[in-house]
Length: 348
Ligand code: KG4
Ligand code: ZN
Image: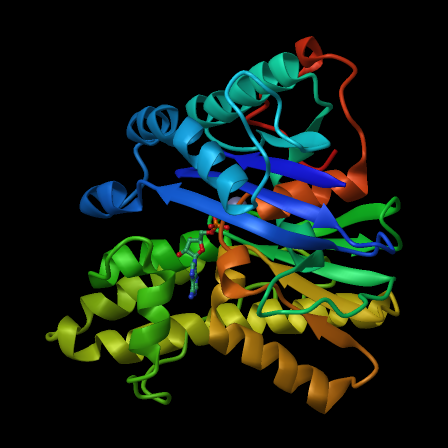
């Protein structure tokens, strides 16, 4: 079975084709096409929804065409391509952006007469872990598992007892982890999105120079709070006469605080629920220091839990994860008329 995924919930315009494995345990990446307007947003230090949606409406068709071509799907003008379903992100996200993808997917589903499978973007991030790529082969992910979604908009802990039995354990009460990276980054003068820049700068920082608070670290609920971090960094910078000189050390302390909270809370959720696996995903999961911190913590504290993280390019927004989630969710709409974009969608 081949699924065309489409993702336009934030600033990316993405399309990908995946094929299901013969034993139905995972999907294999056949193509992954992404166009981003990030360079335009970098100038303004954040995403401007109108600019994102305008670019998406320009690039959606070329990106889908590219994904089908890269996947070597036979595809002639006026004929439906050789795919079995279309998967589309219908929320959460920016309404203008979501509409570009949703309306395109509805149109294609109707004219090509293909099933349409709506996907929650958050489940998409989770299911990036079930995508095999040419450089990362799939190894079985055992249930029960704890999934940590860490992106620019979300920080959530989810318990999965199976593909059908999924429950939300907790999430951020204010800023998401990626948002904390981006807001501190803006304060320190790093380009947007600041996560990768903070990660690089942190390598050059003095590890002992600063320590920032770890909110809710020992709280029993599996909630997070990162908004205080930005204020703590701001207070620290107000005391400094030469901020640029301290940028790297402040970046280190910021990243260290975020990582310690993410790793400790995920591990304690895993131990509480006797998880066999921890899987992480979302843009922040691209952070190598975070990936290493998880591996080190599990090596030291619990070698019975296996750790999984998608290839870096599948951590940030992409359409392969949407196609993968669609395969495991298998809930197509009976008609394109039944699908509406939902910017407020949470865990359904
Ligand atoms: O998943 P994503 O592409 O979009 C959302 O669904 O939000 O995540 C984007 C977020 C941004 O906040 C960005 O700063 C963060 O992921 N990010 C990182 C890294 N790469 C991207 N954060 C920390 N370290 C990184 N290497
Ligand atoms: Zn995302």
